[in-house]
Length: 191
Length: 63
Image (spheres, rainbow over the protein chains, first blue to last red):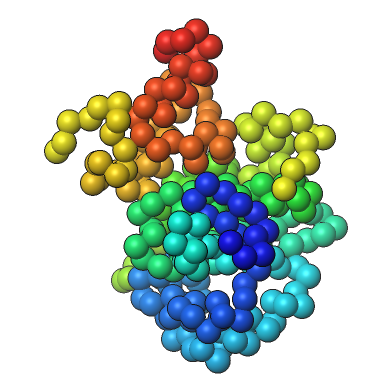
């Protein structure tokens, strides 16, 4: 385990390394199946673009990008981030990608979301985490449901998805709701 | 389809993938009118885990 930022049961999250950028990361963001739900990523990704992104996130103060690493195999399997962090109003967006397909059927995505919420609310002291996703993305819809995000908006037919326009859903999880569900007092602080 | 036992888990039930896992969590929460914590959701690895969590939440040793 190298430079772990947060450790879970099956995965740990760490700052991306230059080796991550040189690995499969850029290929995940070219893959049609993987990028189906990733908004603007309709163009093929390249190693050069991934290197540029890696350099850019080193100095970003409104975005926390973390590599998802499978503990058992010590393999870089995906990436997640808290983005558009507003330090005044204290909210952010959350997103995650399990790039290595053999890890998609396991517990890794759910555990990643769990760890990211803990980071957002307890480590960064944010008040709300929001997320926007395609209504046709069943997995995304369900992961927001089990973590009790509440739908706060829906733009009908905004997104083009394989031959049809589908709704864009925006959902929010507020800190107080997350704390209550996890039976934490507002004085709780743990990494 | 294989018969489910307390030991059934994603390792023994081929259809138990991440989507089915989330469906299971939501169905149990609705059926028993309860909410799991994040740690509990991540800790579920078998039906035995589910039974233990439900017994723990019931507070009486049974659901």
